[in-house]
Length: 216
Image (cartoon, rainbow, N blue to C red; front, side, top):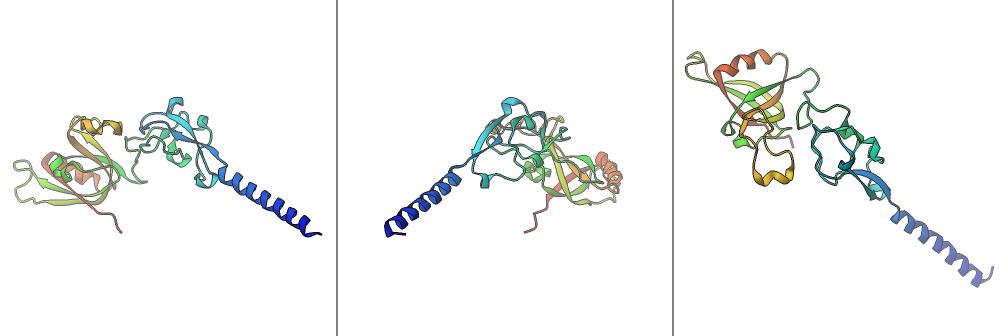
């Protein structure tokens, strides 16, 4: 083979390689994303989804690629505009709480009445872990009863307002307006052995929630 032909062959090979790399770098796959903020308690409709085009290596394995596969499903947790919809993040039925959290297997959910000053100044959110301390109310509890630690590192499932409604806005864009209601109760997950004790203390105690930091 002459030198000229060899150079032509190398040029052709380089062109094919460059073309393949360019195609791989520009290839895009359609995936389904939230078109707006999605709340856990509402089924996903056609106006809630949009298609985003991303490189194949940037797409999670369980990403939904067809919008019709997400319609009628419920987010397990709040989803932000532009967030990719994953099959693991959707459920057939609406979650019991707006947070999308449910009690772990074998646990129950109970609401602990608290005011902001008893719950870390109101800075409490679903997913946090808290210790629950019962403080006897004068005239309702025995005079010799002191403060009690009722449960440790309980999972916060939801936060409710003083009238039982949602605490805080449903849509993050409304956060500047302020919460719809004052903090009224915090729903936590408890074991079966704790429910009678806590139910007994609710009418005659006030409660203090102590935030349990996440382990490093």
